[in-house]
Image (cartoon, rainbow, N blue to C red; front, side, top):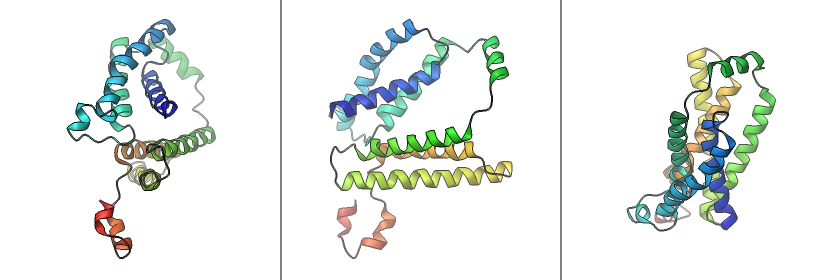
Length: 202
C-alpha cells in the first residue's frame, strides 16, 4: 500500500517535471521536489484521501483527479511561468534537429500508459472487488469513447483522422475518468436491473 501511494506521488512529480524540462537546473529541481512534495502534494493527498477536511466536505477523488492531475497541472503551469520560456536559440536548434517523432513508438508508449492507468485506477481499492472491476471497465470505456470522439473531431475539422489525435484523445479520456472511475453507470440498469436491486448500483 505504501509503495502504491509512492507511485502516485512519483507520477505527480513527473507531470510537473514535464512543464519545466530543459529549463530548470538539476540542483534547483533536487531542491524543488522534496519541498513541493511535502508542502503541496502531501497536503492535497491527506486533505482528501487521509480523511482530511476536503473529505469531510464531501469532495470525492477515487484515483487522483484532484490529488495528482489538478495539483500537477497547477504546479506545472506556475513553475513554467516563473522559470520562463525557453531561449529562442534552443527552440531553433530543436526544430532543426527534430525528426517529427516515431508514430510506432508513440502508439506503443500510449498502450503502455493505458495498461499502467488500468492498474492505477483498478488498484486503488487495494483488493479485487466490485469497485476495482468497475473502475477498470469505466477506464476502458472512457478512453475508447474519448479516442472515437477525438478522431471524429479530427475528421470534422481537418478532413482526416490522425494517430496523434487518437493518442491525445486516449490521454484525455484517461485523465477525465480518474477522479470517479468507480461510478456505476446508470445505463447498465436496463441490462441488470432484473438481477440486482437498483440500490446496489448507486
